[in-house]
Length: 519
Figure 1 (tube, rainbow, N blue to C red):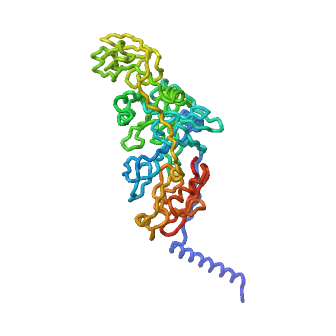
Figure 2: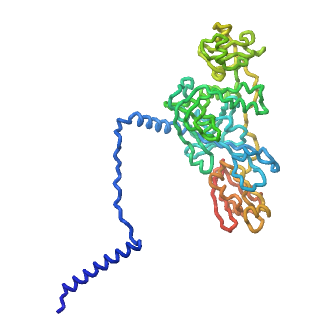
Figure 3: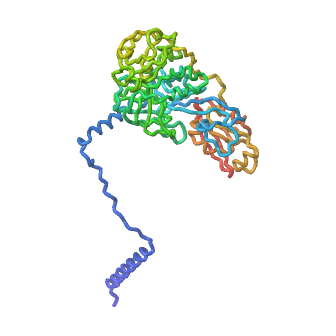
């Protein structure tokens, strides 16, 4: 007799056996994997806020400072004109600004693009930076954190302090930084260094970085500017002694692109211009240096008013006093500036003598050459100063009237030179001959091949460097057959517009890159 309940039970039983057997088979074959429960995440603070409140307060202060100061910081791109002909070998140092392809036959025909940082010092568009950032440039562009950009004019620059002043014309008032008193800066106090560590490619993603550190030392003389002036045919040893090196040293990270950016104190006031690093590799190794703001401000005022620095002088040759000097001349401490020579036609003639040791200026102690030079630089020609010195073991004072140093270097002016659009955008192309066709792995010569992309240029920032050795087929809607076609097509693109570049590789694949033409 058929029992439906019993039959149903058998079906369930055999199904269960089949399921268990199948599960075992699947597990043995690796068809299943273990199942894990979602982890329980802990979000509650593990340290009480009051236990670390000082650190939290400092972190909040850094955030507030960065928010307040960063809008004043700019990125500067400076284009320098070509210095070599196509037949000359490109110097190694110049190659750093270019992505030079393997087997490159000729140096670039366009100039180099370099850059650094700067900061707005007045709402009407004055900007401070380093002289070495813009020196020799024929085109300077300033970029703000919101990615707006402006063409800049070099108002004036001073190689003796590494300070330069730019001016831009903006429709709206700009966010200007607040000035501090660098003479009040103390060793050990916290500072922020703000700037742009890179100008192109992947490094462009690092724009407007903020690093923190302390003031490690004051009055550092690195002889960087003096060495540069010695090697510059416009100056040489005769005037290199006028270089003023009284740097603020910090352990805040400063890389080469930070040059010209502000060093700010915890009140959000700029106390220095990031200027140099001490490194054997070219990148940060723990020592950064900044130009004191009081010195930079004085230089800036002259550059704006006169286009050059009216530099006061005492008319003496000087050196730092040593322990032996202190013993010989009866100094109270190993501090002061030893007078070596006195210019017969200078302010100190008849007042100072060789082997005098200067220890104070207008009642304020001075302990080394850089400090005295920086203090003198804050006066103007014609000002009178009181010099305290040790002579024959006794302290005495003399009164001097400063005159103007005989330095007639004219300020750098952006040259009036025709700059074609391919140079502005940062590419170099050539007719594809048999040799270049072989280099690009094309079967046949013909057309135009991309040979170079200037580092830091708009093209490089958009990744055009990845298309070096490819054929440039089209610019906008214009078919390209010769390098002149490229120039004509790009010259028709106005500043601020986007230009479309179409490249073809040796496999026939075509890709397009859209690049904004700089102003």
